Length: 606
Image 1 (cartoon, one colour):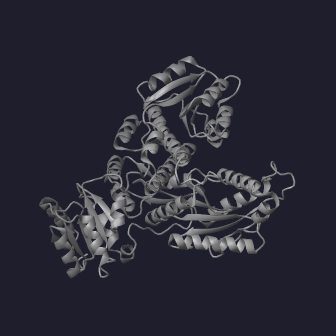
Image 2 (tube, rainbow, N blue to C red):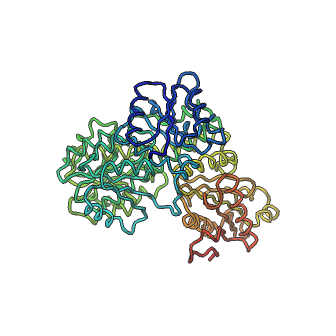
Image 3 (cartoon, rainbow, N blue to C red):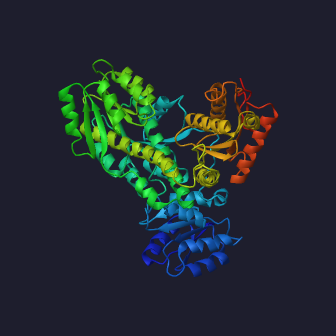
């Protein structure tokens, strides 16, 4: 690295001394400035390969200095890493907006500092701040960390055939380096490693604002009760005990990835609200109060009920009990339940039946259901997950594991509730279309802009569907605008049923709609588009109001970032172009870029 130069702009002498020492150990040429003005002049004169910029500087702050540096055409491609003592939520976004390529918190971790810098000397990265190569599929990426090659091989074998992209690291330091270069969606992290153990890796990742939201599942020894407690204390979300059961592994991974997606989408929607100046008083009025949740224990054995209640006595839950499935369903239908602990063996109807009914009912489908089963009953666990259970526990239940599970699910339920409450708040603001109940054009544009910026930073695809009702003018002309409004409302309801909670549906204008699909590539977007097209065609839209209304259909055009465009207007224009193509080719069909469609995928309507 002797040919690489680093400019450090830092006013604290001790911090400067530490950074200087570390950089020289790495073989870098070091220049120093103690204020923003001198730093800008030195950057312009020396044109270094990398700039380390303290945010809190005397006079001009570091972010303002970064903006000035990035405004200079000669320094536009020079990566700037922000150094700050403030690990507050939103700091990372502020650094990105200023033009920073990364973000390092103080006190500086001397063991990982040089590895954090290395990727930014790649010229290809300097042009794309906080960007990673977009994934051409919609697979979540999992980093498996273990110092034993055989353990990694076994773990990869258990996940073979699943819809995950797997990456491996053979120690704690390698894991930290890989996370800093390209953060995964989830870590499977062994505890016992010779260089840096799993606890320390977890502690460092959770202390860094750029990585603290990555879910971590610790892998513990067979008798690791103390391991589990320590893991939770340093910030791990989950833990698994060796030897790892495949069904349990898949259930835990699914739960953590879902939690991560809800968390991310809630953050983006909150930013959209703020940018559109949503009324804060209304938001606070409707926001769910933090504190106690309601937990329903469905157990006919009094001793087991007593034991579960005792384990949860000091947790933030109001505990309600039910002795059978019928009583449980009545309670869930009348009260706002967050979590259900559901025994499989119940009188009259089994826990499976109760779980199925809860997940099929719109009012209760978001309740987090934990199946309770026997130690050797693997089939019960698998069946519960297939029916929609969010987790399961094995008897005899270990108290600390019970507490950890329900608290993770409580957090997941809170994110879900907030997503729904966001929509309810929006009903009273200017971001909802009054006729259809979908988001309006202004909100769509703001949300898409934020989502594409996040996609660029995190390196995943985002799809956009543009949907138009076929022959809608004829419907209005033949049956009147009131019937036309009914058709718009019914199709809006169909679209909402066909998408996920994290997707955003909006009315674009007239009879046109748009849907934003985060984490979705072309193949996934085609599946959603075809589901909507097929469901609308089979739903007899408007038939309840008018007997002789013709079968109503829709045409769909789709575009995927970054393949069909790098900016909001490019993606919208491409989706609109494909929608026009679908209409021109006969309507009641979907159209995407043929270059992105894999062989064998038919776009013709059935």
